[in-house]
Amino acid sequence: MSPADLLLPQARESGRTAEPVTAGQPMPGPPVPPEPGVRSGRLDNSAAPRHGGPRGLLLLILSAVTLVGSIAAAVRIGTADTGWTDLARVLATHLGLDVEPLPPLVDSLIWDLRLPRVLMAALVGASLAVCGTVLQAVTRNALADPYLLGVSSGASTGAVAVVVLGIGASTLGVTGGALVGALLSFALLLLLLRRTGLDSVRIVLTGVVVGQLLTALTSLILMASADADTTRAVTHWLLGSMAPARWNTVVVCAIVTPLGLTVAWLFSSALDGLAFGTDTAASLGIGVRHTRMLLLVVTATLTAVAVATVGAIGFVGLIVPHGVRFLVGPLHRVLLPYAALAGAVFLVWTDALARIAFAPREVPVGVITALLGVPLFLLVLRKRGEL
Image (cartoon, rainbow, N blue to C red; front, side, top):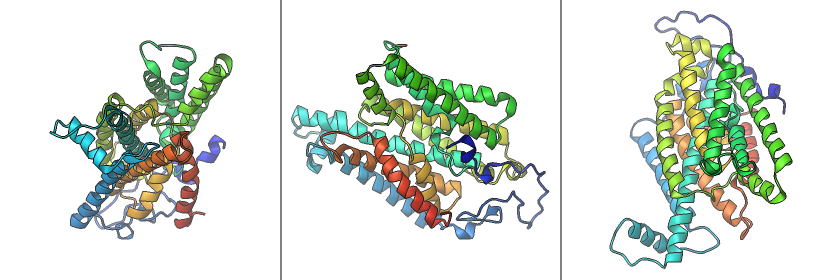
């Protein structure tokens, strides 16, 4: 797919001067394709389901309970059978309660391997879903996902440089190298955008260019320096896997992810305005350039931490926002929390499927998300009348 194919018509800036708005007069905005909850270029609250008040709070609580239940159930899934009682005893033991501990092997299986893995899947799924939601509004591009900024390609280059070339292997490790590569790729993106500005078309095009450049560099390093075993190991990481998750990386994600999600949610109104273009956002009093910059930094940071920890996992940040938007409407104040919960649940169960689908061999979770993501995305497009 060429970079031009990624640019949808709604990604182009209107270039018109915003007209003054008087009380009782509808907000003018650039023409955009109709979406659920959008009519004539302005928010149509009547088309979106009502999720405020006690009913909305109850639905949000039920969604959170679904996530907790999914995490508990996914911990039990694997080649070795464990029961609900085993999980409860392990948690009680590590919380310091007076219970009889399990054998060390079973305790380590649940506490050191499965629980960090499942929690990491939930955190990464929430991050990727929210990043996709934010970038689709910021760039006005329905195909935007967390890897639009080239951060994933930069992380891959950093990881390959550590594994294959040994650069910083003793100090950074694979995760550290991937994080440094992701942040450097985002810095390169901002450097290239410094002269041209932060409008949506340039963000998309520059992100594609940076991503393709770093992907080519990664391939060159692999072909020139790696043997077959190293290439196989790196390829497994590039496809995304929760297997490397440990408590130290879970703690890092557990700090970064809620902070990033909170910042994105605080800018919900700004995202609603940006979804209709620069003119509409500016007429609402939104500092377009500074808001875009802040949201790009937030999404790049969340994506960099996620990719550095578990590799590049595609389709979560693309299909989850569209599916949730179809269910709850386009208002980001409601959309972002549900996208986070849906992304977490989706990746928890996808990772569980990756563990058992071809047992005892484990499939990279990125392969499963792609296999599930394509038909789900087509289904969402069909339900929205765009296919």
